[in-house]
Amino acid sequence: MTDDRMARWWAAFTIPALPAVAWDATGLDYPLARVAGGPEGFAARGHWLLQGVIHDGGRWLAWAAATALCVAIWWPIGPLRRLSLGRRLQCAVSVLGAVLTVSLLKHVSSIHCPWDLSAFGGWVDPGRLSTSATDAGSAPGHCFPAGHATAGFAFVSGHLAFRGVDERIARAWLCAALLVGTAFGLAQQWRGAHFMSHTLWSAVTCWWVALAGDALRRSAERRWPYLDRASDD
Image 1: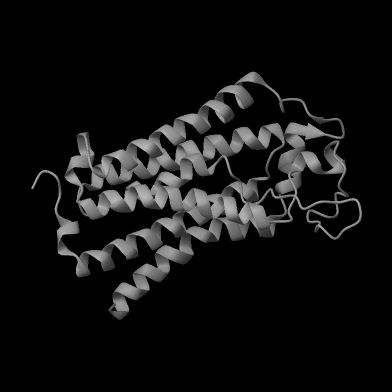
Image 2: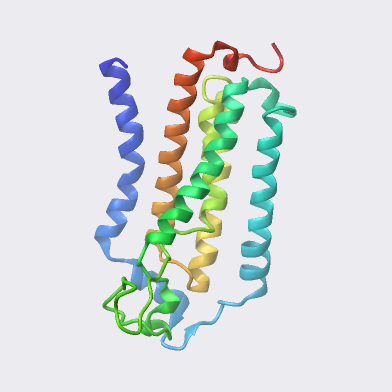
């Protein structure tokens, strides 16, 4: 990799993380959470729209879209026919990789959700966002980064897959993934399930996985050139 290309890759890796780092520095997680909740908890926690439609329905819709991308590896339709086999693999595998990565990070995370904190009607000292399994009477929070927002952000891999093939579709794909991920994240924040920082780091994690998938695809195409042939060729 040339120095110029390495510099571009490093910029693509670091710059998207700056908003999350800047947000963490502001300390605005608590003030924003207080807009939706208080000592009595979060009134919208079980709201039919936020929980039943956006959370439960959105999760099933995201899995349906991920399944469709997996099927399209071998039987592409619409704009996906313009992608090479390698790019279709990149798109599908990166989505699944992002979901798996966020799930693993949540599993090892000790950070709690807003609704766990006593300031919002929960049981955890508000001064301790994290507890470990060894803390008496406590359990790890498993709430970081945001899981449901990943149902949108994970699809940023499509942006990288279409980049260099159709820039219009690439931009539209990126906007759609970011809008859906943000909407899912905000819905969960209103329910008390996550802080804003959880959502921002979920987006960053999905982007990093997408970059890794893009790099792996380029490497694989150099070794197996047939991966670079599109269905329409």
